[in-house]
Amino acid sequence: MLARLRGFIRRGHGEGEIRPGPYRISDGWLPAGSAVNWWQMGKSPASFGEGNAMVEACVSAYAQTIAMCPGDHWRSLGDGGRERVTSSALSRIMKRPNDYQTISDLLLNLARRLYDGGETFALAVRNSRFEPSELHLMRHGYPVIAADGSIFYQLGGNEIVERRFDLSQPIPARDVLHVRLHTPHHPLKGASPILATVLERGLAGAALNQQVAYYLNQARPSWVLETETQLTAVQVKELRERWEEQTTGENAGRTPILTAGLKAKAAPTTAQDGHLADMLKLTDQGIALSFRIPLQILGIGGTPFASTEALMASWRASGLGFALNHIEEAFGLLFGLKGWPDDYLELDTNALMRSAFKEQIEGLARGVISGIYAPDEARAFVDLPAVPGGVGKEPRVQQQVVPLSYGSALKPAEPVAAPTPPKQDGGDPAVEHDQTHSASAIEQRLHGYASSLH
Image (cartoon, rainbow, N blue to C red; front, side, top):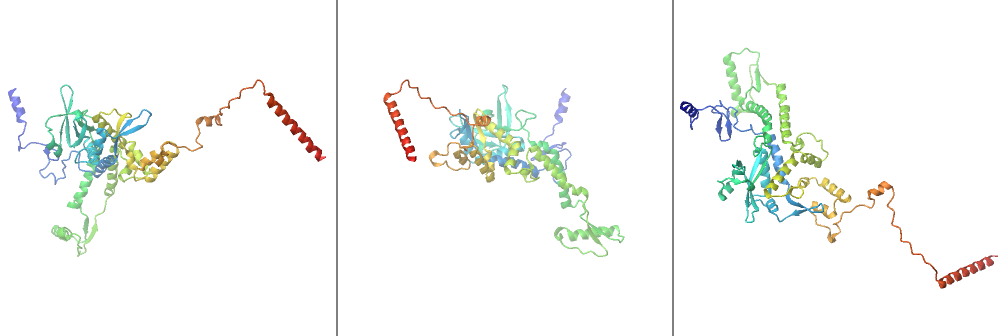
């Protein structure tokens, strides 16, 4: 048994000793068998392969778009409406999270780290009323589960916070904002969509590295010298050296002069080289698909959407809508909100339509004419004051807008009948005498007119 333990101990290697890979370096891990000059051999220590412009575009699209959406604390009313809460701790955080960042800075880096690493962390500092008064982003975080199942976090990676507060002890989960994507291996460890793009990134990286090697190291000839004269090996070597001397280095771009029947011919581009752009396009589409972003958002692809609003609505219905709701719910958990629709945070996506002024005005006009919005409510969407005198508070409809009962019966509702006057038992004799006298006078006057006609 002692011999086995000694053998097991000998398996470890001290610092500086030679050992097989993989090798840990500052930016990641190198695979076993890597050369000492690994950076010259095309090896990459990055966790998910080489950097990719498409991945950067997808991550930046989420981060910058979410940072554009202002956040408001909303609370529902009893009549089905809602009111904006301006005096809560959440509303103050959404205006200024700390003394060195704006809310745009915080949301930008929060969303970026969420999609880069699959999760993001922020430390909440509470005031004397036990309300979160500051929110600080942390680059690194690790969950720690106690014996009774309580959750704590080890946080780090913020030079300002590390000098202001003691982070040596685990921090309770109630003071940590932890936003994470799907958790395939651990309920508190999120995974990034970048993991699903390893093959696409590897394929694109291999193709681009080959092109870089071609342009830098001349891995294959870009020009071919032809002649009908039979040359010896020494002459071929001398001719190659003279050609490289006249066309590379400080002489690059100069015009060489050929003699003795030599002809310079550009190396033909094969069909495989022609398909390189198509292959890179397919990898870009696969990466965008894994991030659930329409290609039109990234400035590539066709134009199947009739307007900017339709394009943004398509993205909101898929990847962007999920990201916004996911962040809103994480904030609600930290601040103890009841949740939608009673008490919740909303990142307003109407701010994304600031550039689509025509579509926004047409939608508001349609809402006012249809009686959905009051004029003052529509004016508030475009940051205009209410109509003086309070005449814009009430929704309005046109005169031809009638109830459904009118359309089903094909006529308006029956009006209410006037009340019937009470019947009189007996008439007044004086009134009856006056009426009789008046009738006799009219009859005599008619007879007089008839006699004059004859």
